[in-house]
Length: 401
Image (tube, rainbow, N blue to C red; front, side, top):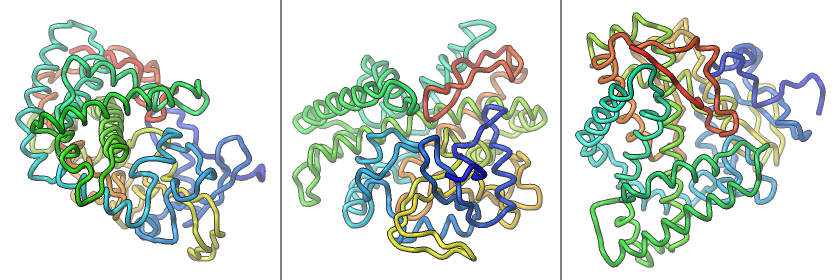
């Protein structure tokens, strides 16, 4: 690897903020050759909005599961590079998307709004009861998406704590104990496989029942596939939303005038959520979404050779002034046009995007009203990032009011 190549994932000196290197590389060109980690692998970082959007639907780029052992655990756990919707392309991917899609329609997710609001209100009551300072990581950011995800799937309340531990192990950073992610995946798959068997015999109004009802049906859904879909839905939706909750609190407290505006007009909550998603995505995904070139691809004056590792950088694309205005680095909850791609685009658009939006929007419409004087209990630079987990987030988020 050439010594002068920038290396991803980029260092983020201010914790949750995009790396300064992203701003620099965005101005350098549409496609940048980069080093990947410390193993000598090189690849290509695609930085421009239009290029990223176009390549997300380009069949010449393949998901990691399509390249076998060459796939690497960049940005996702190793098991997800070989299993799950993130790893798949083509007809099989489309078949599983058709099966899972009805669960996440806007109409069905909207039915959860009263339940999500009730969970938010109860958890904020718990913050008050805990007294000052209170840890929003433990009291709010962890339980909110876990409760909502488990509610959607149909996981009993008493078992939800297991998934907090299993998800953390599954998403462990690559330098951690390699046995833990595999064991966590086995625990999750075994539990959900058993639950699917129960739901086939005793249906309920939940996602596991939906999947159980399609086992060995005309869609050809196998128990392994159903378990994979349930596990991916639970883990991906829980961990990433936990991180976005924490980042939204920190960013809004950096901008007290916007926090005040949210208190005065809760209708701004949807825009606030989109702005958090755009500028503060979770984990090393800030440096790129993994794909592999099935053939040579020409972008401008750069040729991406066949079999190259390619990173489609949503965070860099979110800095495009043509899409986001003349000051795209500025956090602005009133931004009128916000076509970010943190949830992907095209065939791999996140099926749980509507649910994640509902959770964060509900919280941001409620938190400023309940805690108008919310403040960090320690200086922001003393907040400790969860470096052992790929998605990021904080170890603790102490606040006062």
